[in-house]
Image: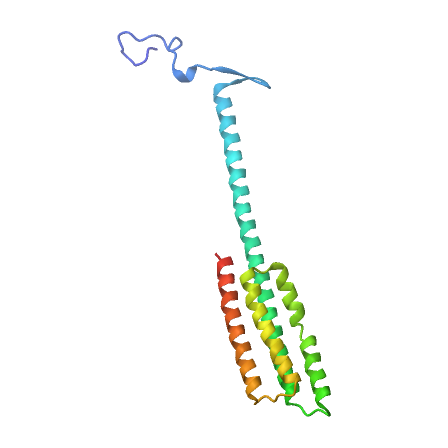
Length: 191
């Protein structure tokens, strides 16, 4: 039956060739694959490559974010531990200076012992390994001002003496400056 019906010059249906009737053959390692099946295979392979690639890219971005967050948390813990150790040492020395002791030598030894037991030397050493120069100089200023407080208290000065008040103020200023540097360092890492 001719197509379209009643068409004056239509050929029989078996003779009409359309684009979908043609089958192109392409060589492959598995033999010959018809064109329709070959393009489907390429499309599937390309989709798989894109899917795996995007998954790997997403995992890499997540991994980098996790590493950055862990590094930030480690730094934050180091900074807080150091500041807390300095504060603990100062408070322990203040309490020891306010106690009654049998002699000035016993009082000085107790104050120095409390400074050493506070852990501020260890906390400072941990920072030396990882901190920037700005952080180290700020922490060193606070640490050395605390050592000055230690020596003034160990020399027999009372908590109300002018020399202690001056050293305490210097230590407070150095510690506040260290906090500013530490905060700016942490905010730079948080980006």
